[in-house]
Image (cartoon, rainbow, N blue to C red; front, side, top):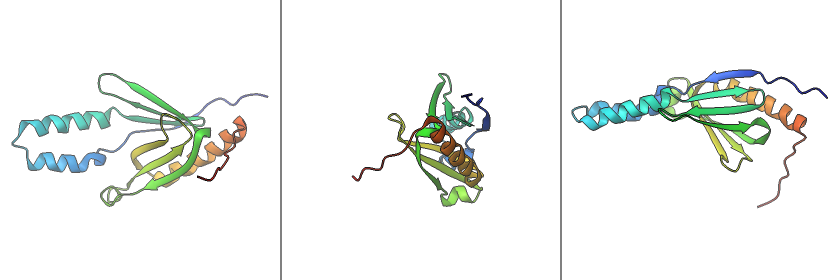
Length: 143
């Protein structure tokens, strides 16, 4: 049986709107030097964060000086949720929240994403394909 070649579907980056409250707070107290460094730090954190969604996994790559890469295999995803806070919805953004079977990331969040509904639909489709290909099935045990 021939294994399919992995294909990258999206390479995303969170929007700066994710930290809008922090930016506003720093602007209100601009006369203090510390908020400028907080502002710069948060800007760099968001700027260096990348979400890479392929047909088999989702990679989260982040870090200013030291880079960290986390991966979630699509077949490990159990549930999908789109959260649209009011202040993000104004800018057409949302958070994608994935509940997974992964021990290190039971909840995996992609923050500040445009077209979240479209992206989550594709993640769901490829997740189902990955589950059938990997022959993984979910067993629901009452808690």
